[in-house]
Structure formats: C-alpha cells, structure tokens
Image (tube, rainbow, N blue to C red; front, side, top):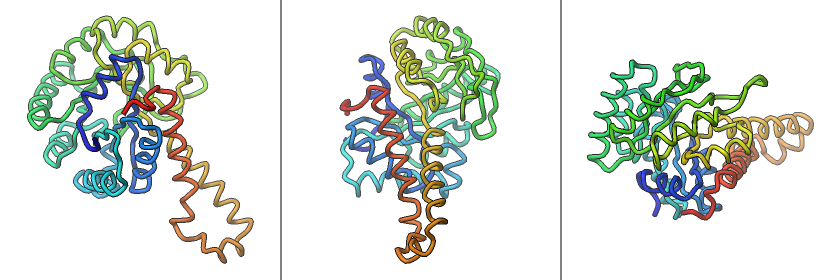
Amino acid sequence: MAIVSAEKFVQAARDNGYAVGGFNTNNLEWTQAILRAAEAKQAPVLIQTSMGAAKYMGGYKLAKNMIENLVESMGITVPVAIHLDHGHYEDVLECIEVGYTSVMFDGSHLPIEENLEKAREVVKLAHAKGMSVEAEVGTIGGEEDGIIGKGELAPIEDAKAMVETGIDFLAAGIGNIHGPYPENWEGLALDHLEKLAEAVPGFPIVLHGGSGIPDDQVVAAIKLGVAKINVNTESQIAFSDATRAFARNYDANEAEYDKKKLFDPRKFLADGIKAVQGAVEDRIEVFGSANKA
C-alpha cells in the first residue's frame, strides 16, 4: 500500500480500539529505522517532520522525497503517511504544495475563532489534494518549535467546534506534555478525555507527548478514544543512550576500534539507529497496531 493519506487508517484504529503511531524523524537513518520497525510489525504509521526537523534536513520537499524514496527502495508494504507535525499556517501551505500526504495545522496558540477559521481553510486546501488534516485545541505542555504551553485541558466546546471544521483527527490537551515527563507529573486527565470522547463520538483523538506516559495510561487512553499517538523524545533518548554507550566503549578500546574503522559514521551510529527501531517496535506493540496494516 505504501504512501497514503492517514484518515482511513487512523479512523480504522478508532473504530477498532487501537492506536497508530506518529513517529517523528530527524534524518535518513532515523526514517529507515521507523520504516523497518513498521514493516517488521506490519503496522501502519505516520512518519512526521516537525518544522525544525524539516529545516534541519534541508526543507519539506527534501524530507518528503526522502521518505518516498526510502519507502520504494526498501520495499515497504505497510501504509505510510508523510505528516507535518505542529505546523504553522504558512508551513502547512508549503507541505500541501510539495505533496505531504497529511498535515497538522497547530493554531492552538491563536484565539479560538482564528484557529477555527484557518483550520477550515486548511481542510479545504488539503482535502482537495486528498490529504488528511489534524488540528489542535488546548495547548499541549512542554515546548514544540517555540510553542510553549502549560498542558491545560482542552475546552470541550472548542473541541466540538474544531471537529465541525471537517478535520480528520483532533489533538486536544488532556494534561499531556512534550518532552520528558517530570517526576511531579500527575498523569493524564482520563476523566476529561472521557468527556471529550463523548462530545465527539467515534472521532479519532490524538495524544501528543506520547513518550514517557506509563503504558497503563496509554492503554486506558486508547480505550477512551485516542487513535493516534505521537512519539519523538522516546526515540531520541533511545538513540542517545545507545550512541553514548558505544562512544564510552570506543574510548576504552580506542586502538581496537580504530583498527576496525568504527569511526565510520555508518558503524559509529549503528547501535543508536538500531535502538530507535527497537523503541518504535515497542510502542507499536503497546499501541496495539501490530498486524493492522
């Protein structure tokens, strides 16, 4: 099936009580790791670029072409959506133009009426090209490309109004945050999620900041209507931990490692990239999307 928009497989997840992963990529090797994990687990996935990561990689067109080319060259058979994560309005328009198959317009930092108005415009433009659309109400805590929030709960009426714009899935604050969770974090507001799901029955809800949430809370959130879960920090930590361990061992055995030419970045980063694949495979299992391709 390969490159597709995301609305059908995200809705299928909502209808059947599991969630699909939206996994952020940072470079070519990272993308390969996500794709290998998805194929191994036979799971549909969204490969996501934040605005910052796309800039780091050379722009949206390059990122989109890279993902497309890897899907083809690696013989990937599972559904893969190319998704913009937390996009400002102008960035969303650019991704629509270059051919992403899914976009998230994040206007949660705007007044609600402006957020809704721009979401309607995005829906009109993206749907005309067969692209799925995600939008957000209620700021997600932590920091994402300069958007900082306190993790407040998304107002129910705002969520209902956003769904009425015609979007395909909804990101809504339920006490979740981006980045590592602090020790004093009180957990997801599952009671609020339940009210939210009742207000937009059957509609797919997106859980941002999926890295580090205890598995039992993840499973409970899925049962209450979460159908897409975003993962970035977890993969980054797995990569960092494995690469640092390799580097420490390198320092202790420098002569041997130099003899094996392990300074070659293809070898030096191999453990880290393998760890990314392992982290993605683990999340796919917890989300319940294995063998759902």
